[in-house]
Length: 439
View 1: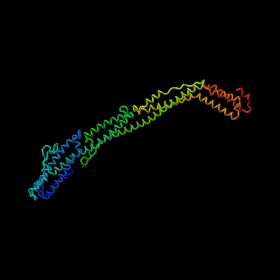
View 2: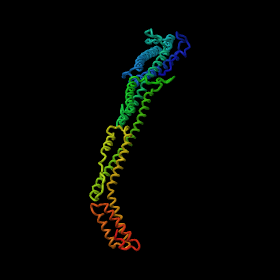
View 3: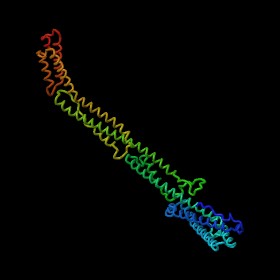
View 4: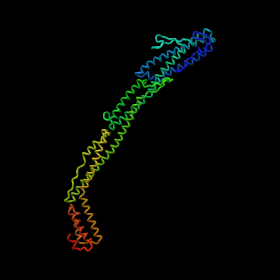
């Protein structure tokens, strides 16, 4: 309330039961001060009555420290109004005495001095164990009554301000943190971080429970979350105690960072799964190409052992499909399994490539023999020996074997060698037809 207490006897020069009798000017000045003081007190009490924190305290279901202190504060506020009514009545009475005569005599001035300075106000006795507890009423001077009202007002305002500050600060912050906890929990579930399966999932559950209990406690007992300032002159000086909230906020931030790490694992796992499927797809295509090539070799090459082509890696495909844990979200368990599957998929692709190489080897041999035959044919042609009857006969024999289906590679290789030897002999200086004929 902060009202400076009146001391109307400070200017007195006469004598009365409580000190010197006031003169007229002193009495008038004292009455003016008391009138202004009364308005200030009333304004403060009305502001307290309309304070949002007081209205919230009146309507809330309180527990613990707040319930106990609010019961005492309600009694203090009721007593404040009773004191104010008594104070107002005393000021009104003093004004009436002063209004009796324009120039008050000794009798009126003595009465005014007693009202303004003496223990002239009767108020209800103070409950509890303090002074005056055993009496039903007390008599106080106006100055003492102002001191009493200032004390009660400061105590009552401190309770109201503290509760309002806690309610204004903590529940909204707890709600925001709880919303973040729910978003993090949903994200955690999508990547398999679940209670009972991952420590971060257990932490999220615990944080949710703590926040629920914390909000209930803040709403029902806000004063237990108030830290008063030591020696604060302002009523209600202090701050909300956010230590429990801050601890859970830090815990949630740690969980959120762990979830982000799991998300990174998921992104990496998705890329690795895509590569696995691509490797297996290439292995499938290679094996399909090998099976097609085997059919072609069997049709075009005779007397050649063509290896069988295995089927697609179905078992490995099933394991890759089982490793795709997106439908279960257990990404944090996937990395060790992917390493083994990647190695097996790479081995499967190499096996398919080796199978294709083995199957197409006869065709490669035939192509090499055809190339060698054509190269020697071109060489002898450049030297004008294309019409040599021995070379022409052996070239035609080799060509018939190589371009027939099925082609016997052993016969074809022998025919090409005979053409090569005849060509080599024809290219030697002094070579004769008789010398070439026996090859």
